[in-house]
Length: 292
Image 1: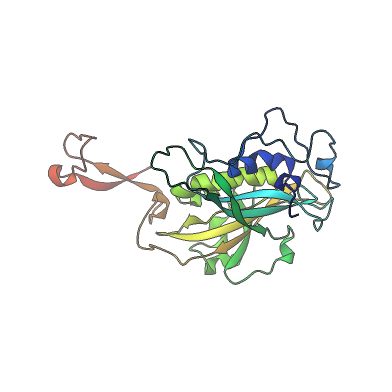
Image 2: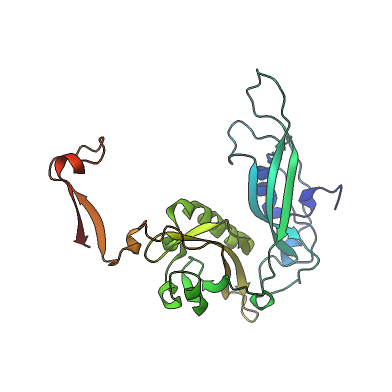
């Protein structure tokens, strides 16, 4: 692979994403084709395996990503992946790229633009094979099956030993309703990647505990097709619990209240100026519960 273009090994539908991550510009009229892999998705012979790069690596004036660190999933050509297997993009393997861009710094006090990039140093991690029975489940891992709207359809009973829930309490819940609000955007990005690429390893995100606080987890999700009916698809998730329950005594969401049918509402005795701080101390406001 040394000396070859990275685009020779990346699925053609992921070319634009990796170019964006690298700070490269691609020719707009360039026809991208997938490298030959023998799969149904790579039978097109139009275009080229290596797209025309119209610019050098640069962060640009308004880069879409902050900082120099990058983490994203792409599909790479693989001779070890069985063709015609019961998952998406046969002939390819989803790889998690953990990388950092290397800028070329210049010691000039007048420079205002972003420095050019020398390249990217990355660690590529091939995601586990799609068959769950091939994965050794450790004591801090549990398996769930979810629908394409991220609603949990089945959960292993051992989850009660790891999280603040039973399997029955999680079944039917949506991951977005369990996720910490600050991590919802990360989860949505992984949701889109999962639908497009068939497999994804999420960033670390927080699951809200039942009575307070949260727990950090990471999920490897795979779209698995029925071998007899390709239209019947499921999402199998292997979840890694990577922290203890944190801030257990802090209620961070209404769902963590003792009675989920109540919500907290603040009432003030006098007129409330929204531009000022909390008027409770000055106006004798009270904190009460109201039935929904």
